[in-house]
Image (cartoon, rainbow, N blue to C red; front, side, top):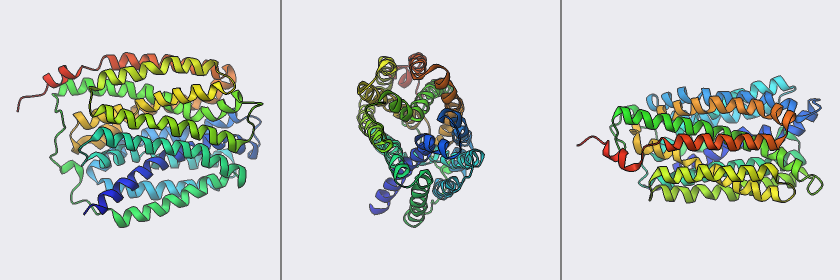
Length: 396
């Protein structure tokens, strides 16, 4: 009886890792791709990857709706096979526009995981904070793998293999998901499971506004840093580390260690009120981003380690709010709507990353991100405290 749930958990966490890996292959390999396609500077190629992040946001709302109404298992199968095939198409691109089209298609399928896979993972969890923590760790290890694996494949076999290898792996995992995960007896929309803390509509709307505003800031920080850190390290470690695979391994180490923050935060979420925890982590981002703006040499490695630990540590809170305050039958739709708005804004930040760095440098970009963290803190401060939220719960 326990084999299928364990298999489901393993496959969903692997899917989360792959989701983030695929979205960062282009950013990690951009210098090699730019040289192959005849671009003088990597910054000029960077805007061609924005379609993946636009679709990652825009596709989240319909993906969440289909997850609730059509079934989460079906949508996850579409995720595995769609993202695997899109990655293989990207490996065949002969120019920047062909690659942009393949990446946009990949982004559309990658949009499925967060509004569908995470609610599927949480629907039977008795310790949601811990489950979210492990899920977040898996996703961030995918980011680390993008840095490490992509760097190795680019150095040893060329950038096309950086898309081929994970693409083939994902198709294989799709077949395993089809075999191991049973068909759902009913779509989530027909379930009657209630939220852990059911709130009246007005209070729930306020929580959703705060959640969305904080998620926008978090998405901007996450996408700008994870897409820009590779080139940032290459610039700040120039003369100390030149080999692309070594730079990739260093960045992978940053992400792998920083990912542990999500495990710690997940356990804290199960024990303590959300608001003070969330606020402390968001405010902690500000001095670390300022430090990273001015760090050079090996200090950039230290600064990025702390910065990414705080950025990753903020991620579990929006999922924790959804599982605490939203009925399971609605979770994919609520998550999808939140992601559509958040990543709609953050995809614009990815588009601006190359031109912004080209015009003003990485220091200015990181100082702007520190300002974004301050705005995020203001949004979190508007979140009602735990006592007010529980006082608003309707009497049984």
